[in-house]
Length: 160
Image (cartoon, rainbow, N blue to C red; front, side, top):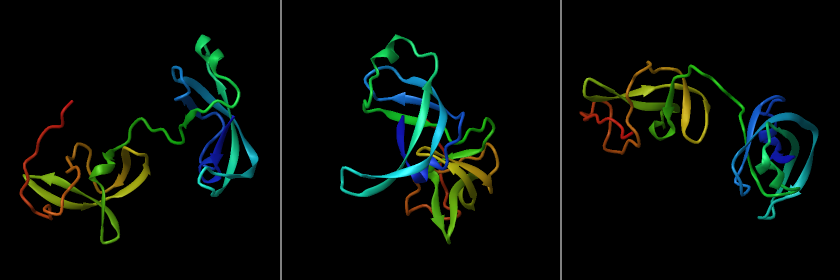
């Protein structure tokens, strides 16, 4: 059982995939089996009242490692709330706001092109691009204030 902030719990669905990590052993695969219908108030370590919701996960194929996971152990639960096999995405570090819209600098013919885009789902690494950018487009990561529309740029391939 993991306690989620209520704002996060509403995004989770029964049957969703999850993993239990940072508990002292190898990550454990799990499935969401229930999101409780009622929340409760908990005081955080910083003294802030938070609305929490109990979410029940079932371990999948739990091996001998899982037997060491005990009641009320501290864990990090990663729960998938969105999955798409064929999604155009850009690194979060390429995004910025311009005139109230999400934008990137796309590289076209050696120049930076200010490009407004519409984003969908995002996480700490990537944002889904719904409109405004073509597959295969190259974008500038961490654009500085020295980059403007039509600035000449040199492209480099990312290190792998």
